[in-house]
Amino acid sequence: MTSPEINRDLTELSIQLNSVINNDNSVKGPTLKRNIFRLLELATKGYDLSSLLKDIIMVAAKCEWVDRKLIYYILSLQATSNPEIFLLLINSLRKDCTHTIGTIRAQSLKILCTFPSTLDPDSYKSYLTDALKTALADSNPYVRKTAVTLLQTIRRKYSISLVEFNPILGKLVADPNQEVSAGAVALLCGVVGIDSSLSSRDFFKLLKKIEHIDSWNRCQYLRLMNNFSISTENEFLKIMTRLEHNLHHSHQGVVFGTMEFLINQAKRFPSILPDTLNVLKKPLLNALALGDQELMFLSLTHLRAIVTAYPTLAYTLRYRDFYCRDQDSSFLKQEKINMLADIVAEESALEILEELYLYAVNASTTVAHSSILAISQISVKIPKMSTLCLRKIHEICTLRKELIPFIFTVISSQIHWLMALWKQYTVY
Image 1: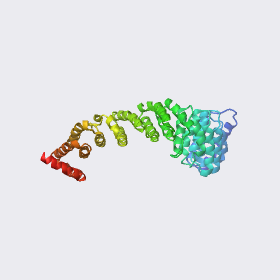
Image 2: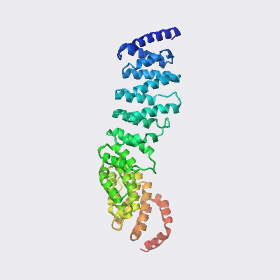
Image 3: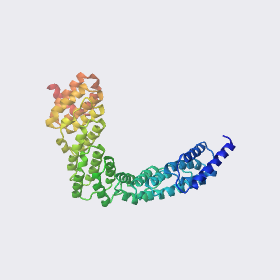
Image 4: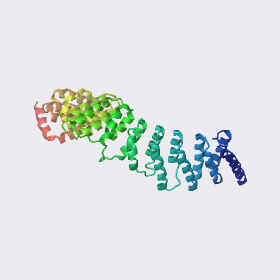
């Protein structure tokens, strides 16, 4: 397109825009849209619209919001090469952030935070923080929700410290809008460190509200509640009673988040920690029965940690719950076998040994290795079963000769007691 043609277009657009400006009412219609699309076409192609910028900004103030957003986009394209234009755009957006309509306030804030800035980041940061603080205290929940979301998005981009937002976010934790409240909690979780603490008042606000929010928001609340330190055993027991319904929740994130909170708090009270862990067995066993392989593995690792810390709890578990199934993955079978070795007792040793023998004979090599190790652990843990364990290992060698090197490795690591058993077995 030649220069005379561009100049003619710009002149015509100037006349059209001035007619809009001189109109006392807000404007809309096909003529205005044609002008906006023509401006958008020229801006996209990189033509200089500086002679029309003031008219464009004045027209934006009289347009409906849909047209205004297009005009703001046109201005942003021009602003990449001219910081002064960007300042005009910023001022227009800041004015719209105080509009009487909440949707326009929220959308203006979104544009302000998402358009690429041509200003110095430190200078632009002040515009953003002022606008966000105002929006976070807005009476409209949609504006508050937008501000919380944008604060999460831009805090790293512009290195905005959330410390100055903490008082506002602390109030928003108790916001009646669930999304606003959960967003504030998520931001505070990123700020509150391990050594920081949640006040008693804020904690009990969360505890009261957690019963009435959805699953994902509960997970956010539980993360923040971990920063509270329960002071007495009696207080802990009351809180555990209030949270016990979370242990039977259909959302496993809520279940495991609640368990994490209870374990972290119970560590301060050694006398009641075993009882707490005993309460956690049921949700872990329920998760083990759901059929999801990764969830089952996670449940098993938690159960093993509990049994390792308090071996007496092993006697309250049903060992048949940890038998392997054909559809179990290899890593899950190995974890179940390890669990069987951990909870074996004299009354269950014979049945568990027969089960492990079948795994060693029929399963994959990795599962067989785990089974052989578990059999050797049973022989150490329950001396009465030593001879029978050694006999089973001998039978495994006969049936699966490829396992002999591994079996000898296991034997060599426990050579002192196995030599005595071997003499007893050969005499027998």
